[in-house]
Image (cartoon, rainbow over all chains, first blue to last red; front, side, top):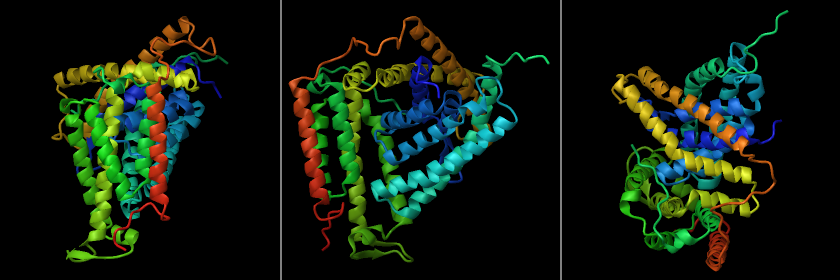
Length: 183
Length: 275
């Protein structure tokens, strides 16, 4: 695994700033009250997929905590950790996605979405509600319903926006493998 | 659009505390508040929060708009708890005093009201501490003092960059949003869901790509200046722990221990006035 170098330090910092700023961008679903699509989830998936698990994990943790603190004035810790879990999970497969190398197409898009669905389910339907119950003693059925909606929303927005971001960046950001070897 | 809470120089004694001291206070305060459901402890913490908040000289226009958002969330949350689990209070406290029957499983019990009062109290204990932490802490100083505590300066630097660039990224965001709106993109709730996703994408794409460029620029600049060459570095904003810092830290830890002992003294996290 690559060490935590300059690029990672800066990516973590600016990625966190991005995540915090995007806290305010929410797309209300309308038909389900109090749930909205959070584009920041797609951005986290994208950043983790480009820069790896350490950046993904810290951006999720720090970004969610700071964003909540700055916009809502309170930190709901049991929902901060799932974002870190999600970031780490996405980041673990960063090499396979090949976004930076310009190879994000077909198979790696499928893998990206498979990983994000599993990661979202683990983060929001397992980690978040369990922490809610352990830390805050909230009623179980309420937190699981919330978790399911959060998971659904994040899966949808990541599938659309996250994939598109990856495709877009892989096209303009292609660096190392834009040249192909001739046989 | 919610206004962001930011650091503002005011020259209070709280500002002069080391960033780390405030971070320790903030973390142990929120952890204590998270763990305890003991109403007596929460009430004491609530009063202390109010006093500290007063001392921090935070003005209403710094936090007012954020506070209103929190109130809305809190109300939604306590209503949701009642709708999904009207018997949570009974489950916790083991008794049932029905005040009013709404039909079905929705009955108002004094246990439920008491449980939800605790939830509300938690909000009001945590919120002022978050406000104070953000408003009285200088980001650069916090990063410097984190390093002094032994945390890798890479992490400290990542945090400093994050805090430093939040206003810049927010600026970019507004510029891009205005530009796209000028081109006729509908951002309000009137548009259909698919259209709304599209218009958000129209903002997020340029924003992400500018930020990726910025990551390249900043990391190149740092590389040219030899960032990360040595194991240690010095800090312009660094500050030594003073007597006041130790007093606050010790007081915080003592308070946390006492609060948790009182909370868990009778075996669980709840204070039960019903038996």
